[in-house]
Length: 135
Image (tube, rainbow, N blue to C red; front, side):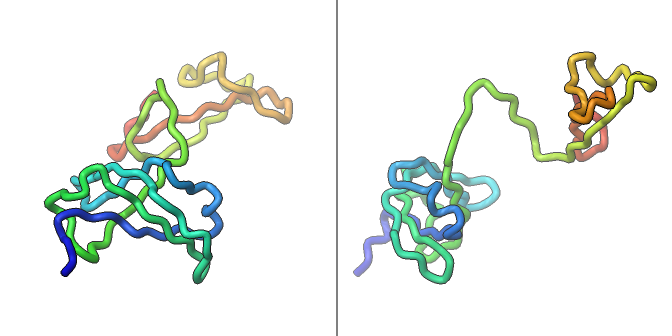
C-alpha cells in the first residue's frame, strides 16, 4: 500500500534547458494560484526521452494538505537569483525614443544614447494594466 502522507514531485523539462538543471538547486512548485511550495531538486535523470529530461523535487512541505497523488502542478527550477532588485508586476514595457531636437521631460539626461550615433536617447516605460505609465 502506498504512503500518501508525504509527496515528492516528478517533473520534466525540455532537453534544450537540461544543462541548466542540477541536483541541489532550489525549485518552486505552484499547486494553485494561491499556493506555492518550495523544494530542492533531488536528482536529474541523465536520459532524454521524447525531447525531455525528467527530474525529481523533494518538497519542504511534503505533507501539504493540498497535495494529492497524480496532481498536475507547475514546477519552476530556480536557476539564478539576485538581491537588491526592484520587482514589478508583469506588465507591458514600451521603449521611448527622443532625438536632440525633440526634448522630453520623461527621458532623463542620463538615458543611453543610440548606438548608431544619431543622438537619440532611449529609455523604457512600464505600463500597468490600467494604462498609467510608471517611472
